[in-house]
Every structure is written in C-alpha cells, then in structure tokens.
Length: 122
Image 1 (cartoon, helix red, strand yellow):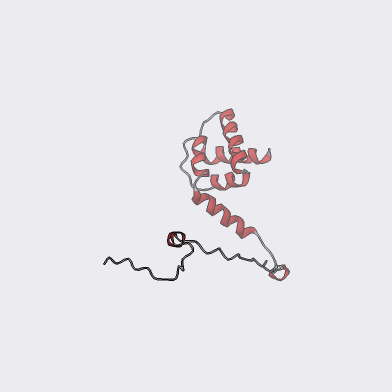
Image 2 (tube, one colour):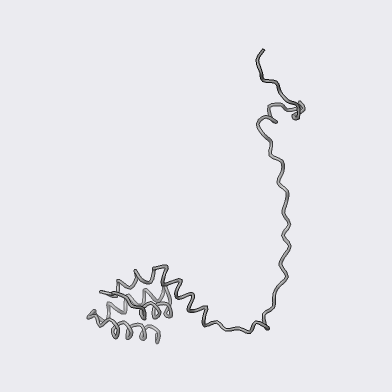
C-alpha cells in the first residue's frame, strides 16, 4: 500500500496533471499488479512526456526502460567474489543419431548400396 501511495505522490508531484484521484488509483493498481512498484517508480523518475496516467503504460512496456531498470538493479547487487562457489558442470551424454536412410538406399534394398549405378543409355 505504501508503494502505491509513493507512486501516486510522485505522479502528481512530477507531472501535476489534474486527473481524478479514483482514476489515478485504478490505473496504479493495474500497473502495480503487472509491473511491480519499483519498476513503476523507476519509470516515473525518468524524463517522460506524459499527458495522462494511462500514457504511462506505453513507457512501462518499452524495452529500453526494462533493460535500463535491469541494469540499475544489477548495480545494486553486491557480493564477495571469494564467497562464491562454482559447481562442477554436469556431464551431458549425446546419443549418436541413427544413420538416415536415403531414398536411393530404400530403392536398392538388398543390393550393395556402395555399387555405382550406370544410368547412361546405350
């Protein structure tokens, strides 16, 4: 609930649009379910040209914002390289595919398929 209030306050503060409270809340609830609070706040903090709360969905679905948000999230992840354990890779066994039977092999069943066939006339 606190996140939705933060989104609403940021929206009214930054864009100052005179849309109804109920209309803005309805859109925010829908967006929070679909995209999450952190991502919506990230997008709202960008320099957007918004005319309505419903125009925000265009920016939320934009791949550039999604990629930028993922990069920012990745920067926040901190870990100690010495504490990381590397797992031994699993062995994968591949089965050799059966030799495909060519149409010529099917026609010459029983015959030696390695023989050359003389198809010249005469």
